[in-house]
Length: 405
Image (spheres, helix red, strand yellow):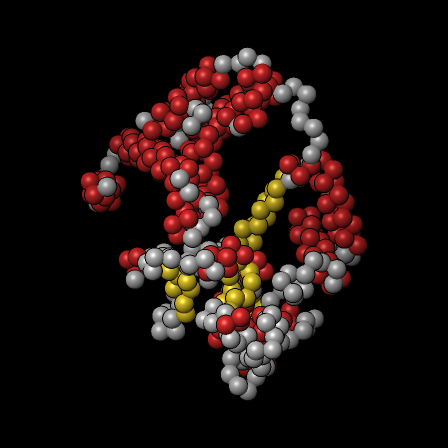
């Protein structure tokens, strides 16, 4: 690895402006091949860790969750590494081409569809030699475009199961919500024919009802407004499932002075999912909201309910959520509504107080872990974002950023 690091350091010193156009393009090609080879080895290592359940060493349930929490990978990348590692065990020729840098992770992702368990079973039942199919696809990957490869795999799969799957709409539905650094969101997904019809009909009804003379919004803007209005109606109905003893609600945190101040106050408020808002926008939200005071001292709402109450009441849970934000176990990103409030210093059964100082947000898995040898401890001397320390049963600390510790 030290030699690899040295080679990467040397690459970083390359003056790209000294290269001719031809040399620069050749350099890009070489880097792509090297990128493919490194990604192939990363995929192989992730597969071994996945097969050995190595993530348990750091208290994580899966390699996907470990990659998200410890390597700070996106859910999409973590899922692809794990899935491709599993599928490549059935596709040795693809794995070899990947390791040689001949194909990249995008091409592997397409070819790997033929190695899904149900597709392998269908091929076996029909006497199809999957190795020959794999070889043909690799040849196409080397000579055709990425779209050509997608079409070829799709054609193979359609002939493999000409009658199509039994209708199960849940398998055809997937929606992703991605939050960007500025707090905005991107929505993407796929719905089956019936589910899509339902959503489109509901959004069109709300969109049509909201139109008026002089409305200059585009269709996309009207649909976006309709989706938010649909969620407003659902939240206001009070009929949504309760999340950890509290009805689902949008959380916006704003200082008392900013609430009263009529100025815009950029970056003065934060949402429950970490976005930053101006004070003006937060006051707009507050026009139709309940307001809870969370002041972490003796002059505000009580933050200690003593020994009589084992379950953290809603106002105290809000204070814990405000402080912790998500599961505080090292490497875990489980949001606040997935979490229990744990008596982390002294368990309630052993005399622990139901108070803010004795509370910590832990998802169900990691709540179980701390009852089986793992420990979480608060360090108020550490900088924000690193105030919780997690230790394994053997006493060693789980470190996400060793270089900073």
